[in-house]
Image (cartoon, rainbow, N blue to C red):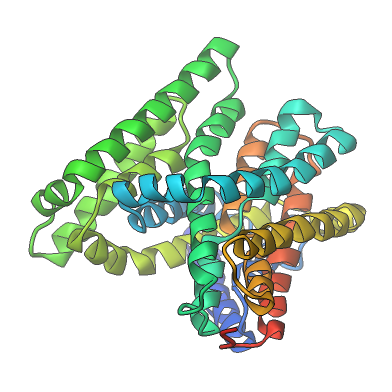
Amino acid sequence: MSETARLLLEIGGIVFVLALLARLARWLGISPIPLYLLGGLAFGQGGILPVVTSDEFIDAGAQIGVVLLLFMLGLEYTGDELVKGLRTTARAGFVDLFASFTPGYLAGLIIGFGPIGSLFLGGVTYISSSGVVAKLLDDLGWTGNRETPIILSILVFEDLAMAVILPVLGALALGGTVTGTLGSVFAALTAVVIIISVASRHGERLSRIAFSGSDEVNLLTVFGVTLIVAGIAEQLHVSAAVGAFLVGIGVSGEPADRARALLAPLRDLFAGVFFIFFGLSIDPSTLPAVAGTVVVLALVTGATKAGTGWWATRRVGIGPRGRIRSATALLARGEFSIVIAGLGITAGVAGELAPIAAGYVLLMASAGPILARAVGPRATL
């Protein structure tokens, strides 16, 4: 078989498998992320049908997937919303950060990742999946509940924290001197402040100037600019994901709605490729060895994340059922945990980080929605 034929067959097969897994996830009522990871394990080293020819293409597709995930996240917020969200949710956000990051960091030290490597595991256990949680709230009819603004405010704080965490971890992943690392972090944080400031004042006006009446032109413009900025950020030793996130923040108003509609299918495709690629990098035979660690991490961080949701809603007077819904809604981990784990692998963190992160996301992305559904849909007490 020719190289071209094998390449097309492998890529086509992977995309078709993604479609089947997405359909299965929809039927089960869960996020497709765990199934995508399982698909990657099946096609990777030690899997039932290893992919050989198309690995470089899948790697490039995975990088685009990360960029689009963060760009689309940036579209969800304007500069004003980010500033207001930071002011109103700071207390609950910092409690969430401490309660969910610390167990992962301590576990990394115990396992032997060292102080730097443990930061990546702490990041994996910290952030909930905005995409999974948002879809869950919509599916269960909880969007009008009293606790929902609290849940969303915690997610906004986590997303803001990602604008700080990703540059730090990205700089650490790329290595270099202490001075260079601090310079990269400072450059990233400066860019965050400048873009949020510009977006809050002039974002809608600039977005209208950049967009035209043609969807074709808009798609090519937004996609191209996002990749260019992400590439520049990577060259400056700032995470490409941060660059994409900042571009998303800079697009606001009606252009943001149009960009979201245009890029959502591309985001779904390349995000699926990203999760498949992460699964490809893991030998399934390494998962049993870390199963105990994964279960303990899931139990501890599940309890701390649920406790944060309970506490945050209780302090504003929401009843027990609303507190339970908040606690379960925040449990799911997903795309950003895998992004952080990927940075850790780039940084040369011990090989156990990849299987631990994969097992952890598999468990939390599945258990979170299941527990939330068990609470009962559409209850409003």
